[in-house]
Length: 360
Ligand SMILES: Nc1ncnc2c1ncn2[C@@H]1O[C@H](COP(=O)(O)OP(=O)(O)O)[C@@H](O)[C@H]1O
Ligand SMILES: [Mg+2]
Image (cartoon, rainbow, N blue to C red; front, side, top):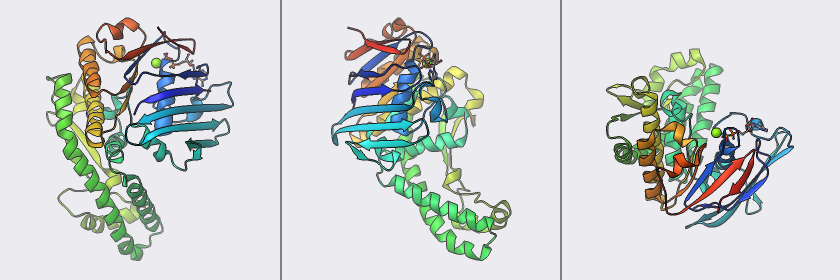
């Protein structure tokens, strides 16, 4: 499901551009500050409705533009062709369209663009908050289980209602809300659990290929004492939930614990090893997605040379090549990329002061 055509305007320092990327590997090189990351960022914004660099999209829009427009033609083996259009105005208004029809949710666009990002901040997946790892698991579930988004929304609604009851101290209503909360919580939990069961062996395979000397284990924590029923936990914690005004246990507190020698991997591994583990998580996720859906992931790999040394760079590139998916990969130095890896099918782009040109 490669991006066949990509149009970007009003993004950071980039001049309006239209490119026809390769369905295989796209190398993008250029000096610091030329606009490489901004190109990947534009694709990420289309896929997820958010940037991996900033929590506020207004920073992605060019300072001197009044609108940011992204357009992508996507070809999907199973779902056919699709044109996604995203228009954001300076005031914050946003319009998202698929083949000319307005989409009401970002998730619909996301289904067309299963994008995985490997960039300098991704080691936060290990060291950052549990929220990041929950989102990681949920990406995997979301792209395979079509009902997951609605189930997740149902759960969020249940949680909000239960928290409102807790804040109002309406303890007599709690038992009524608990039943629905537990039901939707267990649905989410089951999806995550099933997903991780399938994910683990794939992760182990990829991590061994990337670096056989790094040994980490993945353990899932559902968000409550795993030896107890969630309903019992809620009853036990009711007084404290009432005092705090929110629900302490449930899938909103789930965690993927990534450990090395029984310690959090983020505390033990070197920064370089952490990046390797994160790269393995992301490649395993894309690989499993491809096996289960018979569709392809799109990889955005930013500043590869600064991320990994030559040996690991080569191993990562080989794995990406094996996936036969579309890759956008940036580097300051063209040689740093093409030295270690010369995939058969590729295009090279050069960025200079926000202007992108394709090399012959
Ligand atoms: N909102 C913006 N409008 C215009 N230029 C911006 C904006 N945000 C960042 N820039 C500039 O865009 C340039 C490109 O940044 P970036 O894509 O990170 O470059 P690279 O990844 O090639 O090092 C930087 O020089 C930065 O100063
Ligand atoms: Mg950059």
